[in-house]
Image (cartoon, rainbow, N blue to C red; front, side):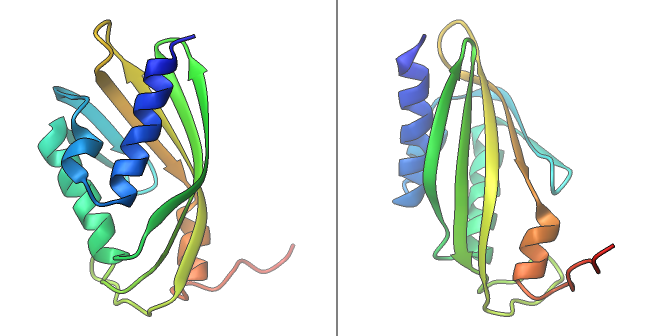
Length: 142
């Protein structure tokens, strides 16, 4: 068990919540690849990752990562958490409707031998978010 990796993952989320974005990305290598699967978006390196975080904050200025659970998985850590916030900024070309989102997320980070983040993956249900935000209607029951 590598408690330092779990502690680092936890601190990354705490840094995001307090908007210390440099601290949120400080363990990233210059070649770290981070994929937001729901958006189909992959960024490379800490600067692009910071851009991704800033984009989330622009869409949800009050977004916070809540109720985290962390799992040590050898050279990986897994974080399950809730992202909660009010959509006050546009989602790309979709206008903000000023509604709240409360969606479960799962983030997986893989580390190199020096404990730096080599790869990151983010998973969440974008359809649930869009329903909560009022951009789409929920699917009809079968």
